[in-house]
Image (cartoon, rainbow, N blue to C red; front, side, top):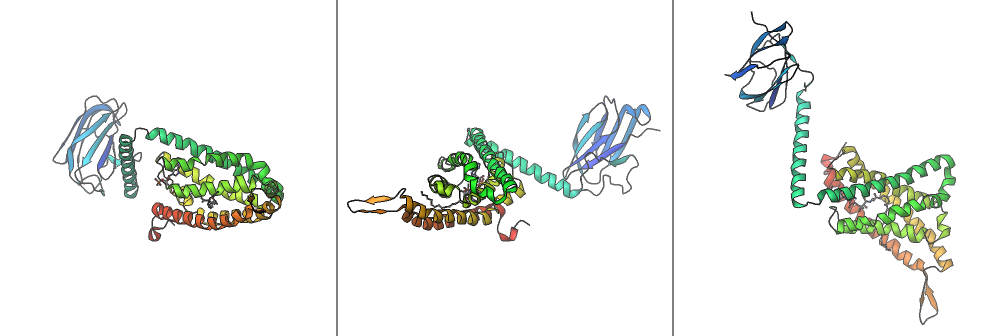
Length: 358
Ligand SMILES: CCCCCCCCCCCCC/C=C/C(=O)SCCNC(=O)CCNC(=O)[C@H](O)C(C)(C)COP(=O)(O)OP(=O)(O)OC[C@H]1O[C@@H](n2cnc3c(N)ncnc32)[C@H](O)[C@@H]1OP(=O)(O)O
């Protein structure tokens, strides 16, 4: 009476994985004919070193060609299904053969297998897309490396600002509002000077974004930082600086990690959703804080006469606060343009309302 080895099995929509529990097998005799797998081999099984064999008629048609893999401990057999389908059982016969059991190392239920299939498909598409991009653009990895490092430095800079401001707020409470500029300005100057690259990147086509929104964003912020705060000592101790810096850094500690992942073709759904949602409250709040700064700075520019313009040959000067009134109007247009841009980006990335993320 021939001995039968233990056979463990798992499936995917297009393949079957059989694992025959026999060690030290040398030349197994494996064939598939008329949809029946025949296996015979000398090896060390449940009944010691012996000849073990079994036959299995598959539930649905399979290819006669199969892949076998011999290891010290077992014989792996991969069989291709003729039709991509999910089987309710392995064998034609309804009763499961006593020597067959699920291979829980590779066992997936149908939905997990579909998810795995989709993931593999996405990876295949990403690989093809990257290869085609590489053929089009041999400097792709150089660009991505530069962008990744840029985003990482910005993320670290704004994280330093955000964490420091949060810790100081918990320690000093409202008192931390008034020395925000004094403690955070150097790092904010560094990050915002670097941010000029966000105008260059779309200009040279290194990122797929429009130049105008980036121009509005960077110039708008740097005007507040370098002119309104940077030129007026009196503004530097005002509480509004805290809100402006906190709102700016709140979005950046989300946006830059999102870009870093984009550089490595990775998309974390939650981070993408936050990146394209958190601007909805932050943008108006940030712009409001900036407008308050501009309004608070007007009387100071009037008193100090900084940046005021003498109109020759007449004996009068135009205060810089006149330009600031124009700037406030410009801000409304600037924010409207960027709001619309971000809304379009959000629809593009997260889909229209009916497909809205939960
Ligand atoms: C002296 C004159 C002054 C004139 C000024 C006029 C008035 C100005 C008033 C304006 C006031 C602005 C005030 C600002 C306030 C605040 O910031 S408050 C805090 C909240 N702020 C925000 O939420 C805005 C944050 N900023 C941004 O989101 C950007 O700066 C943006 C330009 C507004 C939008 O970014 P954009 O890149 O256009 O869109 P995305 O969808 O993020 O990206 C598009 C694609 O490009 C890729 N990408 C972009 N940058 C990078 C990068 N660095 N690295 C890698 N990839 C990048 C991104 O991945 C997207 O790719 P795809 O998805 O494949 O298309």
